[in-house]
Image 1 (cartoon, rainbow, N blue to C red):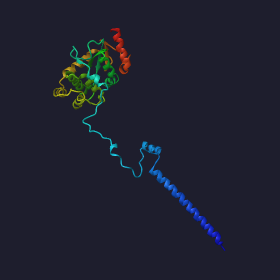
Image 2 (cartoon, rainbow, N blue to C red; image 1 turned 60 degrees about the vertical axis):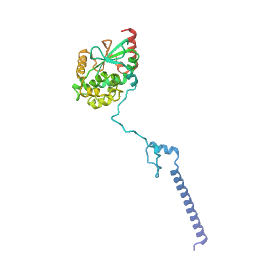
Image 3 (cartoon, helix red, strand yellow; image 1 turned 60 degrees about the horizontal axis):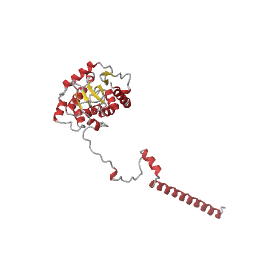
Image 4 (cartoon, rainbow, N blue to C red; image 1 turned 120 degrees about the horizontal axis):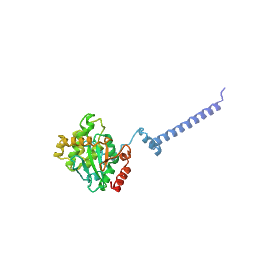
Length: 282
């Protein structure tokens, strides 16, 4: 026959165990809820950087946290870092009627640069050496003669090189060549794409203070300076340079850029080259 006292003791023990487990479970749940409401800082940062979802009941964002952006008016172009220097440089048509001279007549060194607005190597040269060249020009250390050829149009679709050269000549006629020249090369686009459309050229010209006008726009739209573009191509074709574009003459003599490639991409090397020539009185 079962012992009544032992049965009551067993039932009491089981009840106590069940109560203990229930209390422990409630404590664990409460802790989990508390952590969900108040996660510690390190855990929050980790979730933010991994772009995980937020808490189940996210708080609304403050109104000021939403970035305010202004609508873009037209395309976005790369700028010229030293645009103030470029704006201050004098430019004029050379006595040969073709080269574009940028700089001062008292400069001890003269460089002739053969370039093509559609040539990627010309754009690379401008990106790496343009600021140094403009600095040397501004300090009366070098006078640069630009000869702008356009033969890439003969084997690539579209008239981009001719159109850009025509627009550059129009910029010279309206007193704003140096900065426009730099902007053209900074925003060239791939060689195989005819990126210099009329609309794009005019939009770039709008980045140069005072350049856009009815006369300038007409010269760009009608290729008004095409005879000059053809004359510049002839000058390049008869110059006999061996490096294509860009090529360089120092005081009339060709510089071997195959032997001195640093002149194409190292500003300090270009500066030493010009200063050494000035000191030698070449």
